[in-house]
Length: 93
Image: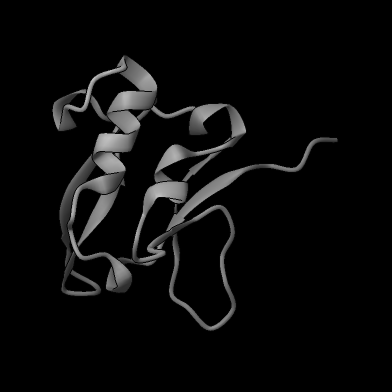
């Protein structure tokens, strides 16, 4: 059985820079356009920060190698929940 891949976000580490959106739009549509991204930056009331949110049914985690995780300069996105940090699962496939 294959291990499930998940995309997790730690909202308190996100600075709202939009790098994840640009990486996602380029991976999906080959253009740097936040409106073509599966990611929307939205206010997270639990953390009090802007944080990534995924549009329903629009993310396939880049076939198992999420571009947004690799590009995030603040390590707010991860494919695993790290001990001691408050992560929310955004997508799991």
